[in-house]
Amino acid sequence: MSRWLVENRESNVDRLVALSHNSSDTMRAIAAGDPETPVEVLEELSRDRMSDVRFAVAGNPSTPDHVLMRLAKDEMWMVRYHTATNPNLPNASMIELATDDDYLVREGAAENPNLTSGLSQRLSQDESVGVRRNLAENPSTGPEILRELAKSGIPIRRAVASNHNASVDLLVKLMSDPTDSINTAAKLNLEKRRDTANSEELQKIEDAITLMDLGLLESRQLISGDQSAAEDPGTSAEFLDRLSHSESAVIRKNVAKNPNASADALDRLAGDNNRWIRREVAKNPNTSFEALNRLSIDEDAREEVAANPNCPVDLLDRLSNDENWRVRYKVSQNSRIPIELLNRLSKDQDSDVRCGISVNPNCPIEVLVRLIRDKNSDVREEAIYALNNRKEVAGPAGLQKIEDVLALIDLGMI
Image (tube, rainbow, N blue to C red; front, side):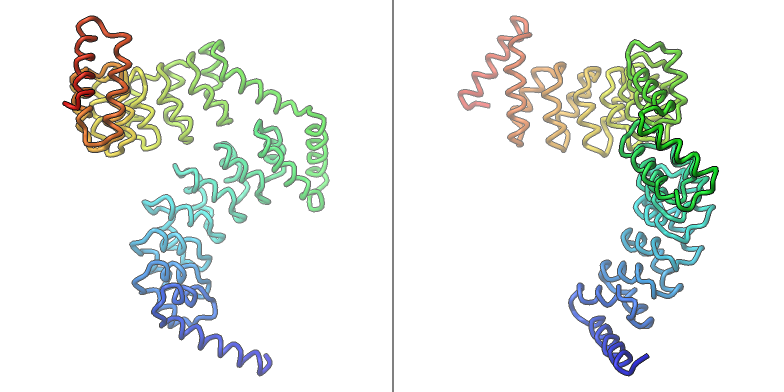
């Protein structure tokens, strides 16, 4: 190494040490993320009060093992996320972060190029789409796990189709995917394999690409036909039951929202790994009470359960106390909601929920009158609008009551 390079590196280290003591959080973060920052300085910065500085240390390839192991227990998810992506992370900490309660941290673990096959297998079953997508994008993920991930939804299948570790057979299969972005990615990936494929693989590649260019891929036609059948309300319940076992998430989703789907098929799909499918099941009027009850504790499907026109009253009662205002809002608009629940939700702390009450055609006029006095202007306007709309369907007694209330509003007495 030349004298100039030595002196230049030493001056850069001095600069980084100086930055590590700077009062600016940004300056300390710059030092924390630089691979040339001395280890003892990184150790000091790993205890910085600012999480931005700590997560820069967590992502630094020069950060020593013992510091990474401590950062893996940091209270801030972003610090744990960056720690999880660090290729030098010890396996014990990797196991800890791959099973972290926060799915964003698990997403970081799924990106790590040194993830073990055991942890890859575990993450391939993760409930988070983001975790499985990152695993599908990871260049270290093995062919068998990619094959399993290819049974997931569109974002994950697209990532698998672009992964250089995907087998030729899997890529040929993905060329038949009904989603253009997926079959195109698979084709591009196969085209890159031509130079490294053996003779058998090369023949498969050439045959598949030729058939795709001619629009003659039989499996693609079958998938498209099944997809159409799955969404056709005229398809028999028996055939829909068979399609509910499909590896295609698009087909399963279409079955889940089909008004002809049987309760048995919907019960099965209520446990699907794909949240969009579970949501469609939660919306379907044919879904059994038992399945709706299971989905009512699913954070991805509770809103749809609350809006289901056949949701049982006891379930609506429980969901009316949900911590998520959107769930309570859906309950407030459900036509099956009893008057006592409408009355209770009309006093909800969230103004959007109180607005939702006015939209419900079963809301008593007395409750609308109370909402007209609400402290929130949006709630008041919705209640007045709802009262005006009731004129068209109200009987003589109800119409007189509405006219009296509206007159009092015009006089400024309400």
